[in-house]
Length: 260
Ligand SMILES: *[C@@H]1O[C@H](CO)[C@@H](O)[C@H](O)[C@H]1NC(C)=O
Ligand SMILES: *[C@@H]1O[C@H](CO)[C@@H](O)[C@H](O)[C@H]1NC(C)=O
Ligand SMILES: *[C@@H]1O[C@H](CO)[C@@H](O)[C@H](O)[C@H]1NC(C)=O
Ligand SMILES: *[C@@H]1O[C@H](CO)[C@@H](O)[C@H](O)[C@H]1NC(C)=O
View 1 (cartoon, rainbow, N blue to C red):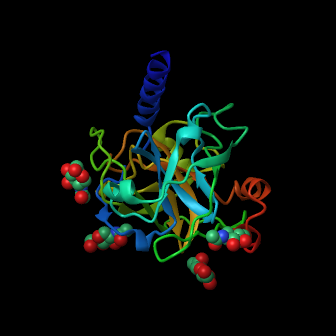
View 2: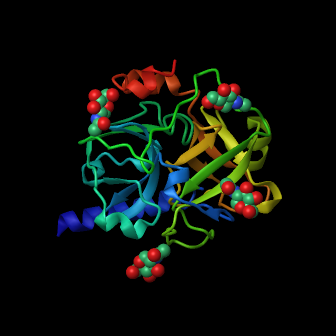
View 3: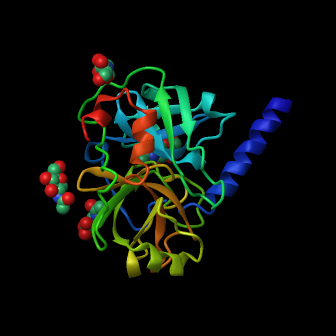
């Protein structure tokens, strides 16, 4: 009984935290073949965060998606477009994980990155592929079009994840403009992307998922002030800035060492 209550409390904490996290709003239905690196991270059979495959046993996600006490019960599902297909898919458990040691330490949601090592290897196909990482100096130019994807909610006040994978195109804006809009610290470990007046955005349950530019993983869905609000950017973990950390902690992986 105690255990059940404990788990429930933790799940409530999740939802609370996620209420400030940016789902795909005003995006398009898409297919896993277009984003074969995205995975669904699930707890008790429910999708709650996205992640990106960087090698056949390594997933990059947001630190705020990983709760130490529960990660042993997480299941990672790759290669699906429709979350309803999870039941018939291979579910991978997590062998080990690492949350950035400076996550949330001084500045809220700074260093929002974590690595999950899977207990068995993914088999690559047209639906399951790793994504390349940018080098640490490769910054996405302002105004560049980037694409995020996920099974997040499609309306701000909904709490139901989308069954079908969706994607959305956004534009990079500089951190100073971003800070003036979100009115909270936007550090060098963060990049911002906006749908401008369209209100395109990522939202609850998209957290941890990819922000892609020219086929590389430039960002991780991290946080925002509400979601889908016109001219309000979403904030993403900068993968370029944290590339050295990824290299140090996932060194055995060919996809990573092959890139530098
Ligand atoms: C996974 O990657 C490792 C290292 O590149 C390789 O040795 C192994 O054969 C791969 N496994 C599968 C199932 O492809
Ligand atoms: C997923 O399953 C639920 C429950 O059976 C159903 O209501 C929903 O329409 C399904 N969604 C899709 C996209 O197949
Ligand atoms: C979504 O669809 C619209 C309209 O067809 C298109 O302009 C946009 O580029 C699409 N977005 C993505 C991410 O493919
Ligand atoms: C996009 O990636 C390709 C190789 O993957 C590279 O040759 C090209 O320069 C990149 N374009 C930009 C605008 O970064």
